Length: 286
Image 1 (cartoon, rainbow, N blue to C red):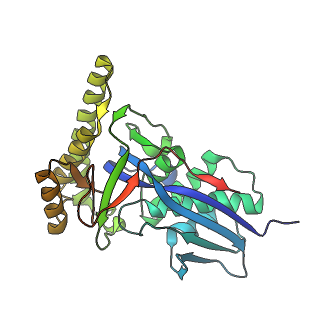
Image 2: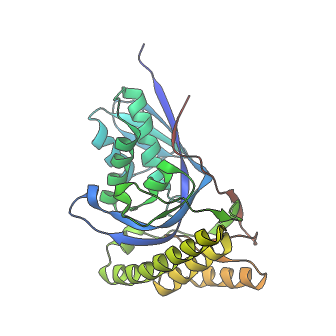
């Protein structure tokens, strides 16, 4: 008997630093940077259908990233239903999570027998083609707080020892177009210049901590992230700036979530939602 519905889950991802690494193909395009996955994410169910359709929290949506991953895996028509407590377009990597979980579920439903790396690459390429991300899928396929010193398409990550990285507090308002940022050459130059400095600083900090056999404080990671947000010119929104100043006055640490009109912090603040930093990676559900 053919399976009627297949389900999968992938975590949300908060990107702290990113450098755009362009290649000739989606398979050789990605990013370097740092970020972490959280306990909330995208639960996706996939079933056969007369026509392909995508729903996000029961609302039919035009979701190019998910449709592209479908086309990369099959010519069959499927219905994709995505459920999440996290919003689209706010920097939580939900395009990547939705595409990756959809890939896992399609593979299960249609018995494609593709491996995890192949499915993750299909989702990564879909994100690149749609302009919705460059490195989220890599983190979501590994899970945890990760640094990518090499371009994300290589799927190689560093998992540093970090102290105090258990919970994070987030707030968001409105949406930011990742596509518009990634396709702006002037912004790309500023982003890459700031990212190169931030990653060099992070590498030295990790090297020093390794020699001292001590973990890197989460507060220092947030500090590097904030510096990158400012130097790249991405932190421009007045409301986000005001939130960060308020958090710092209360002896907390905060930065901008890449790429969204959103803030993350190591202490609670008005309007924030608590998420757990998690090492859970994308998976097929029973």
